[in-house]
Length: 260
Image 1 (tube, rainbow, N blue to C red):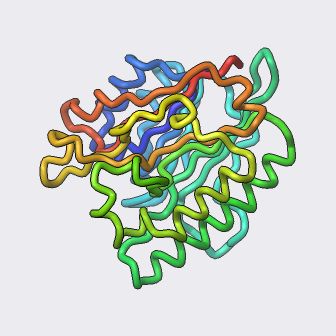
Image 2: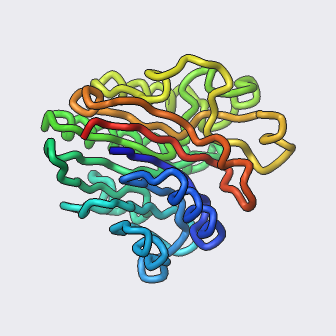
């Protein structure tokens, strides 16, 4: 089973690009972020025509997450638990049943947190604290579980071409990185770094200042596996070439292959 995550930066702007990638990569499950669409306006038909079941949790103009699956999506839950006042569409979770059992996955679009000194950074920290609580509950179930998406966190200096340029950015603050480590310390495995320690391994290149051409990237899109999911991991990768396509997102897909 191939499971992928991708911040597409708007389904309306990126529809043909996403369809092209789905045809090329053929993931069994795709978790998309920043769809920027309300549920009723999401263009489901082109994806259903490719054989995907579609579930969305959207809002107008920004945020929004979606799940595509070649298998039926079961027990779909929208929104990250822990704060009923949080109306931003940033989390969706579901399960699929396979020949070897059930696999559950949460698709997240973690708050950016910029600019520092505004209410946006405390919101990011609070959201991450809720994610840790929720993840711990899922781990206690001792079943294959994945947390994947745009974390908006640069974990380590190796994950940025120029880490010094991010010292005053919410993506690289100690509070953000500490909470990402706290997630890992619960027992998750971070797939890309379990597969490679190579430098210049990035998932995001800004549209500005020729970042893509200069490979001035950062790694902020991550797939975390519970111990039971990690036992099934066969490989992982980053579809970097997609960033060079026409009308690209500033992120690229990240994927993991499971023996499930």
